[in-house]
Figure 1: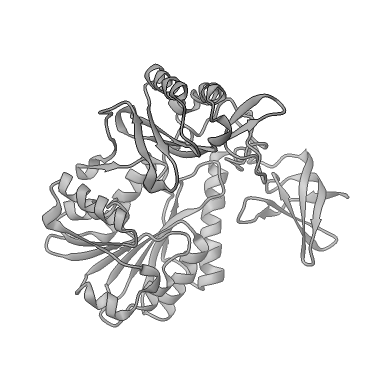
Figure 2: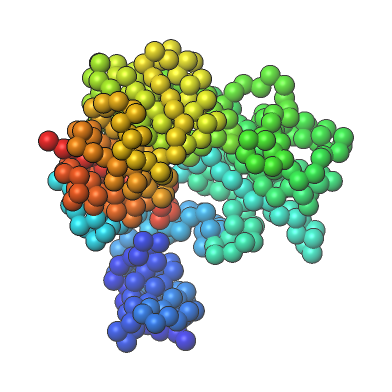
Length: 434
């Protein structure tokens, strides 16, 4: 059934919101202020879902997508909106979640933290598919709402050095005997254009396969790693003695070595801005004792320590704790840091007391947030908390605990555009307690 709709706003996944006969209709690809014709694809009790058939009157924020694969590839869903509109959408999502879920409002809404809009994605997981009926290999992101791999020959959110490899990678995989047993290629780009390709292989390559991979690596100036099972099985195949992956935080004279399957932020430019903002908000002073929770490989820990504070980093993964310790030593910060492995999703007051008195906290949890952690804060909790979030909903939930139960004020909040041209909202918040 086709309907005519006036689009009033966007939902949290950047779908247009319209109404038909009083019922909400979510329209993929529609933007606020537009008149569209849409096809109802799914009916539910309280709302319908629709695909756009045509834009009758475009909205003020509509722009031409730069990528020819937009709309088919699922890697981006907001290239049709101008960058200012994308940022405004993300700020509104953050404000709405804080107000609706957390019943809180920040004293100050900060200007967004931004970086390059294109070529920013230094980490990516590319799917690989051998299509026997067509006699070809596809390498890229999944199609929108599908398990199929998009037929793409370039990608504008990948760095040019990576985008230019999509076709050569197709040709490489096509030539391998294990082309049906190679479902994924993980990409990691470090400083100085060090580029690693981690091939997820489900059977051992032949001697001929190995030579083809070496030739590819030599011709394109990349490292090839093999991963046979989980991320911890990734190993360098070629070339021997290849330079390690690192990223840098120049403001803090920190260099961070990392493995190609270890978690680091995909957008190095925004990460540098984010770390700088977080450190200035916490304002570490020499002699202060801080804790960095969900510290990973030390992204914030080492920057805070460089300002003279004693910093405890706590992380659930023992492997990441070991990497963080190595990075602290590499940067000459072992005396200023300590790292522990602990399950922060099961935090209690006893665990918090074991960290000793800590003046300030930095919290950087995954999408599930840190609700058990903030619930466990006692009367002697930190006077200042910087919370870095990849989910506005869980940030808002945790903010409600901090403000309404633990006596903190939400001094400021804002978004940082880690994933331009997507609906993904990352944010930063500052809490203080008198």
